[in-house]
Image (cartoon, rainbow, N blue to C red):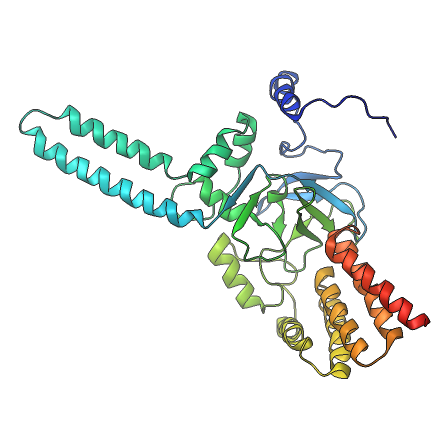
Length: 365
């Protein structure tokens, strides 16, 4: 390892990056490279038929490998959108009023006053297309970073806006997909969707970064994909959600399955089992957890979080059955799945590790 010397303040580093890198014609880490560019992260972006661009592996990744981590350029609470819409409405009414005044005063020669007012309100309305907090964050970015964000897709109807880009590409902050805070990471935003994704992203509060982990072995040349929807829904429901929010008809391998009825049945059974797993009778609960793991394997869904959650419920059922040996085995499985899905130092993985230690002590007593 290299010994650490005096650290340069982040603001100085950022200023150097903005001034020096453009002169050298280089792309700094955190900026998305030109199509075809290959970087040290082990992946690159390439044009893809029907998808625009996609992210392709340049090296082999094993399940649990940290593929990439990125600090968001924008972090925004979507609840601010309501306030913005109200302000936009007020601004629109003000513009209409100005036009009315323009017509009324034109007869007496006072055209410049209402015209200036209308122009001012129109300008203000344009500015309000971005909430104040979002505007402030955006203006603090370098021109390269701003261009990076503007290059992302906006699947909402109408003119492209930063809010539309954020809603289309933003990741939820935290474990819940219903989190009101969205994160905009321009590199990770380039990942396409699959209903059987080989990667999974998650927010790491401690480091302040969105992290991408491989969920299965990925070979060079394979596309890196995440999911944009609930994988446990049947195909028609998944396609409906994806078309409504992102405007595309999913044609991933899972959606083009030769036996879609069987595929749908497996996925809906996974959802049903997980919904009822916690309230099941202990012996039934253990069997249900086994069934979830088997169905995920049969369906080819390498979602390690779903596996880890099923194992955690199995631990609790084994404890109720006073079976420390089985509880230990399930706890160790849960830790293995969580450590690969979120990293071995993540809170959920550490909780599973502590649980496995407790069950190991019980089983050896």
